[in-house]
Image 1: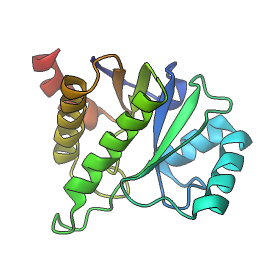
Image 2: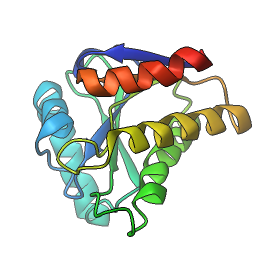
Image 3: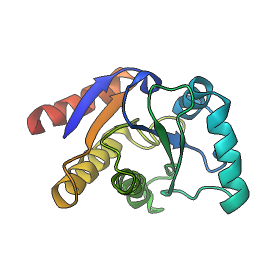
Image 4: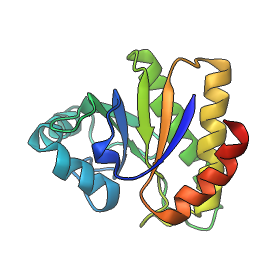
Length: 172
């Protein structure tokens, strides 16, 4: 099941929100900074522990932490690719962000999750291409593995919201 919301992902009440993290897992700008700021120190402390154990998080991979003060229970951190023109496996890496987040949610029996628009901010991924990857990856996952996870795409900006709305209106 897919849904679309225009708003702030840090305010969404779901089992897990997905963070478009950087490889350091220590917060940054955009959605990553907003999640760390709203969630408080508990998220950062768990990220430090993860870094001490495994080092940085690779592009396309995921890690799970508490959600701290957020209304969600967990944060799934994933590192999206930086757009470098499309010849550096960016589309596959972005798909992995969604696949790995969904697989982790399935493994942890998460029933609802919210995705931001991964890599479309300062990482420069073309918004329409990113939207197509997000929707297709979620649709494929729910068809093959589980339609028990409610997925909410949370768009902070109008441009992303309208792109998603145009496609999702035909699917939902």
